[in-house]
Amino acid sequence: MRTTYRQLISEHEKIEACAALRLVDVADDTIASAELAVQLGELADFVDEHIEVEDGTTRVVDPGRLSGPWSEAWAEGKTAFLRLRGDW
Image: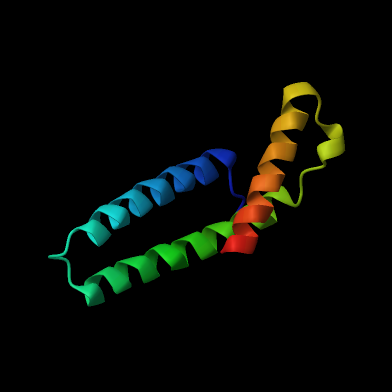
């Protein structure tokens, strides 16, 4: 199955929303640490899967065929992706 950029963006939004919720949970001392650990593990798994799909999707693009703002956006995105993959 081919992944679309719309799907990748949707997953980015989901990851950001889940991460924001986990930050709220960390600040809430009524959340059991075991429950928080499970939620963080699920988020980590989702991010790991997303990075693998995104890497496969972006690898097939020839940046030499892009021009103007598309080329600049590609370079910025590639740098951010490599940083994220390295951090993860």
